[in-house]
Image 1 (cartoon, one colour):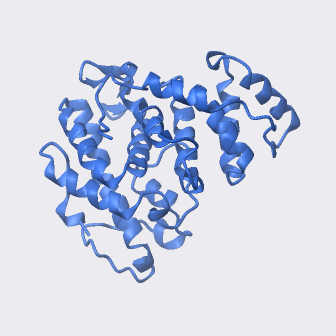
Image 2 (image 1 turned 90 degrees about the vertical axis):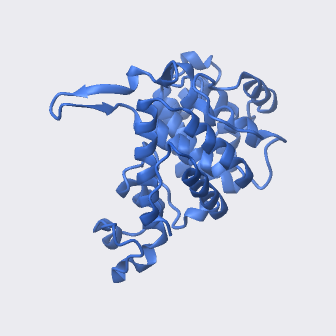
Image 3 (image 1 turned 120 degrees about the vertical axis):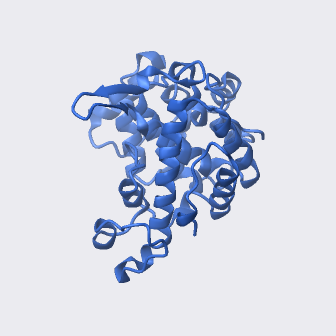
Length: 291
């Protein structure tokens, strides 16, 4: 698979068609709703066109799916609703929670729900960032930026989407597919995009230091002297979510329970990603943070 990010080439409609064909409405109702009326409202919503969905209720459903350990009933319903969950590329909170579900559930799929599902997921959920609404020409749309009058600078308005999308694609690609994807990131050369992407790349390397060194933190051993470890990484129970937060690349819904990054991104993917970033002229790579 030659997976690339190209501005304006968002969700692939052929992949959407395959999902609709393969994921039918489950017979069994989803269990474990906290409130009975919430389940009734959800079932009514599921029969409606996605454009008429109560997005707050859809997000509540996803939160419940994550909270109840991705029970088989929940998986079937999330797969059935997936097309609707990603139908609005500007509902960043819902997209982020959907992304988080599939990051958590990836290791629970012993086999693909159908042959080619991984590719279809990447070309739908994994390309929301490239949807035309987020771009003006080859650069990020002005909708991404608003003026902060207190600090006198422009700030990215919706970084959660970029953070979750990069993490998701890095998780789901095969090792051999990563260099081509990274090259496509480098080929988007406009200033706003490169500013946001390179900020993330720098923070992602710091995140890797945090995850790599967490066992040594209690002894204050640092493999990267240029990094000052936040106190919270020594005093709170270690989780991947905490490292994302401290590196400032967390997103709405990035509540990972796992203590190992390997649970979410294969180590060979991390290696391939860093090597590919290092080889690209427009992308930020800090030799001091390389481990």
